[in-house]
Amino acid sequence: MMKIFISIPLILTIFLSSCSTKHPEIKGMNYDAWVTDKYGCRGERINLVSLIDINQDKFLRYNQNEIIDILGRPENQTLFTRSQTIFYYYISYNPACNGKEARMEDEQVKLEIRFDALNRSKSLYVHNYVNPLKK
Image (cartoon, rainbow, N blue to C red; front, side, top):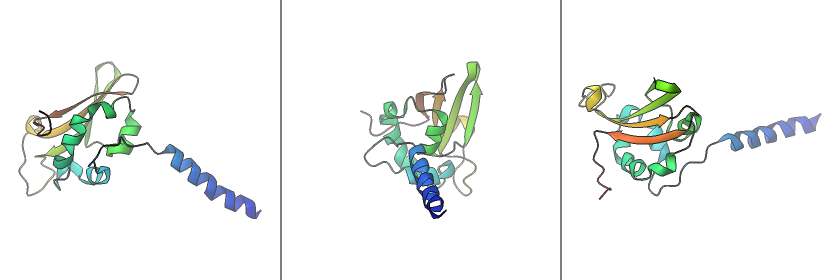
């Protein structure tokens, strides 16, 4: 009977560690800071989005759940034509950030990730942003 109690935590540990998504390895990227900076209110995302932008290829072909494991839940998502989904992660100028400059939706800085009908990320785009790391 004691073996069962010892085996269950071991099995759970193995199961949980096998289900976690491996983050793309990008020097300087702090995924925890990204996830905890909802709507970009703390200003962490604006410092990290350039790394995602120049490493777009490392984020392609992940499914929606894997992207959520990596970048957290999106602040907005849209179901597009032909079963395509778009995730939006806000970087700056969102009205949810009280006391900070807010702009209209089409003027906000945001990361857009598009998924195809097979649930694979197929493109990334940062709206209203000029990446200082791109030459």
